[in-house]
Structures are given as structure tokens and as C-alpha cells.
Image (cartoon, rainbow, N blue to C red; front, side):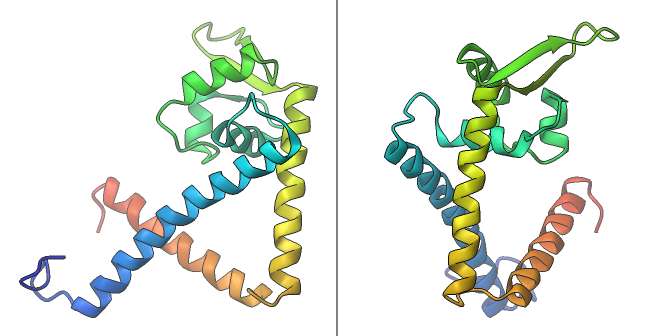
Length: 165
């Protein structure tokens, strides 16, 4: 926000300030999620895989996907998906196979080792879910409202990328 007032004429500065706070919070929460996953793996002595890779394995689950599908389905938002896929294959967390139809396309799926990591992350998320509910930090209606609001922002940003107002 400009020190001289709103960036866009007519913008409510209070709304803009809240929007900027929300953006900052979303960014911090993502980094914190990665730290929480990292801490869980350090506690378990799993040191060869990083939090981004673990989250990627969790999001793939039982699906068999291409690298392109990882981004389009929202499983992976990073810019270095090819690097992480290569490392996960090398470390034995994923199988990869060239498509019979399009030899340029590679499909990936989890190995038993990858499914174990997926289950560890899933267990962590289940414990967090139970803790949030038990401590009344966020009710079912509250989390539904958060999700609905974040989906609206996601749609708005997607429309901005496609130049639709």
C-alpha cells in the first residue's frame, strides 16, 4: 500500500489493509505447514526427504499422474516439479513409466516407500484435525467457511490470470 493512500483510486484502505494481511497470513501458513512436516520427519528420523517432496507424495496418493497433471490438478504448486519428481524416483519413493501413446509423457505413482511417507503425512494431518476440533480452535462450520472463502479467492485469482473480470 502506498504511504500516500490507496494504490487504486476508490479503494477502501481498510479493505486493502485486510487483504494484504490475508495474503501475508496465507504465505506464512504455507511456510509453517512445511516446517511442521519437516519437524515431524526429523522427529521420526526421516532425513532424506524434504517437506515439499513429502507433501507432493501425500497429494498424489493412489493416483497415477503426469508431471503436467500435478500442477493442473493442484497437487503441486512449485516451480521445480521435475527436479522433485526425479529425486523421488531416484530415492525409491516413486515409480515412473513412459506413456505407450506419447513417449514424451512420463506417468508417476508411489512405491511402497512413497505410500509410507504419504501415510505419515496423513497421520500428522489427522492428529492436527482432531486437535483443532477438540480444542475448539475451528468448528466444522468455521473450517467450511474458511474453505469457501479461500475457494472464492482462488477463483478470483484464476480469473485474473485469464484476464476475466
